[in-house]
Length: 290
Image 1 (cartoon, rainbow, N blue to C red):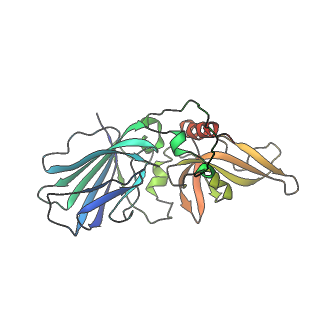
Image 2 (image 1 turned 60 degrees about the vertical axis):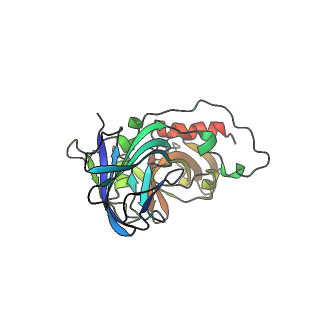
Image 3 (image 1 turned 90 degrees about the horizontal axis):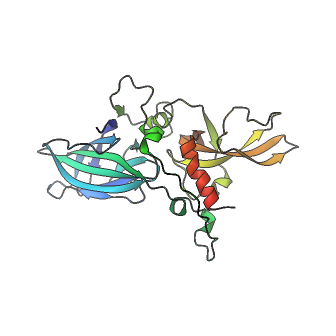
């Protein structure tokens, strides 16, 4: 039986009767062709499920059903831009089912539902290094096994440890940059793993993707060199590589694979990636050596 993971209630001013979804490899747009209302404030109810849910009931009229691929699993509903709050529908680079309903007789009420269908991660498509884009003679990628996951492996689909019951979690929007009660940050770290901050760095340009919450990336930082070689804070351990040693400054430039939870004053708020998250980055590094 399908289980409701989380939901969000929101309001959005609709222009010309249409809404868009941002956060996917494309931006699907939908509208209620039976309604004559073009400009109004819509009441939105967004739901994230772990499987395709049953029909919502006779008072809801379907207007759209389609599949789309989410980039990081965090989406926004908007009109001309991503004007709605962030909503975590599930894991990154998954194909999702999506249904859109409006209420009869109140056509200003919308019900939008998401559920993961399958893992569609492809390093040839999603992780091509930026410096190869537009190259006249790019190197041939290596053919390596591509990891395939189930949605249930990902933090976004696991029960939040703060949850008081087995029911779904109400999603409460928070201001940008406010991590203390940020629902994205909380949901992406249900096991309360240690979190830390990584400064933005020019090496990030080696990764084609814009770094956003829900994505997993290799990130770099300078660290104080320790006698045992382990980082002082005990973080940045997954897929760890020490690239440069500065003996005069007693520093090392190290990288590791992390999952991004959000931003804090221009720095990345992250946790060490879990094995299935890191497997995608490691696969991409083998696919595009050097």
